[in-house]
Image: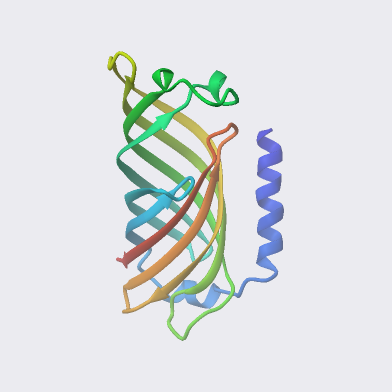
Length: 205
């Protein structure tokens, strides 16, 4: 499975490289390789907001390593038991109301492919990204049984290997400040695929 994933990443990287612009000249000019970014976005089915802070190191204009921490604020929703989903109308006394706080840590190696450059020395414009890394989720939640009003508090953490791919747009508004928008999918080998749409403000130093 690991080798299939690795071969897929390499193959897609080669294909995208044929459409991407040559950044070798810019790479020699730029000595600032660290970039910090504040994020505001939506995740999963795009009704859950999150805030995030990321630190990205550019090995080259095409390759970066980044670490990002996200916080999903307190949310509440109704959770229908799996064995009751198809048995409508439901017995509402068996449905749990759930509130949770969620923290997420992402570590990625990214391969970046820009389709357009501005006159600035750094790459900007429309780009594609594909890479791999790890995703750690930490959740703290409270379940409430609506019939008895009993509460159950619990928390757990999960670590997943994942592949990330997406498309974004980056625009420098000053020499070291940039606005970015990114749609990215993190796809671990299970049912926990995450789709994210984020707006960010970056500073290069």
